[in-house]
Amino acid sequence: MNFSLRLRALREAKGLKQNQMPELVGTTARIYGSWERGETPILLEDAFRCAQVLGCTPNDLCGWPPGLNDGAADDLDPEEGELLYCYRQSTEKRRSKILETARDQAELSQNQPAAPEIEGLEADQIRSA
View (tube, rainbow, N blue to C red):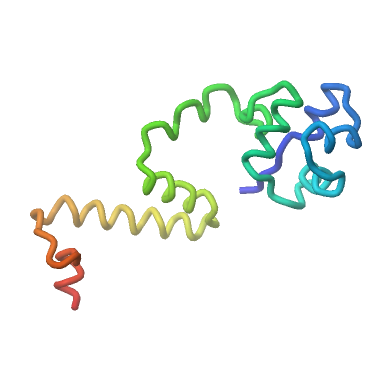
């Protein structure tokens, strides 16, 4: 997935010049310019400050339609959130491998009776040892 923020379009719509943004956001002109050109990833905190300065939501900044990401992560455990993050950072080929592994593990979990953990090892690990 090719990801780019809508920094330039939103900045121009707000009537701001590129050289005004770094001071408003609290960064350097070089770093801000690299964000706007899509050369450098932006930290969440910096993206949030940009959204505040531009008077928009982080969803607007990302170009997402309203409701796409609202509350999506609220119900996730930390491990689920990490899995989702890793999936989103992967290439399409690796995403299909992640899905294949997850489906296989879910099927194994449904087909096996619950086995007690033995000294921290799962039953799968004991059988394969």
